[in-house]
Length: 205
Image (cartoon, rainbow, N blue to C red; front, side, top):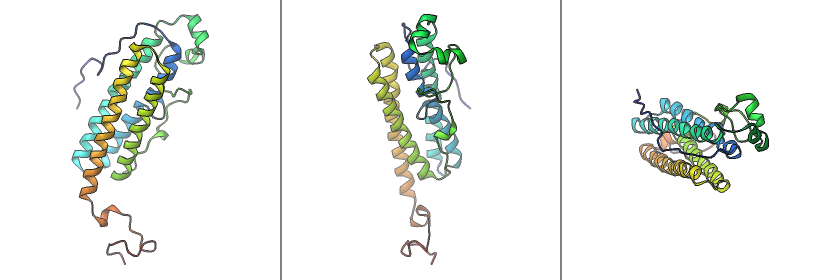
């Protein structure tokens, strides 16, 4: 059960419309390395996690990613809500506008709709945590790319906050991976295949 506090995790106050920026930033809403994929990834992986501390971490970060979705949506909304038809036509936003007007829809910057094929829930704790660490780095890189394209300080400010959280999440998942590895031994750390490795250290031979 969650208690929803009705405010953004970090304030978004953008005074000028910019459809070109919105089309780039929306990738962090529904793109391959965006916040929607992150939230679903972590909130799905937690069920197969054998350690309560790691399940709790996945729940906490997965929930925070929902707040990041909300922030990205707010940024895109504020950049597009007052667009004139001339701005829509001249910015390349018309293809989005014709299907969604200025509503928020999960897609990548390329226009590709959101799909759950961009993330995995494997049911193996080490596999999942390695994916999670990579996901945070890919999201951080995407935010780096966005910041290279943006000059508006009102837009850069919340984007920088989101980028910083990706770094923190990467660190927390790294700590979780170390915790898991410390609790494993040769019997349950490796997939045993006697035909492949006769020196695997288990009792399978």
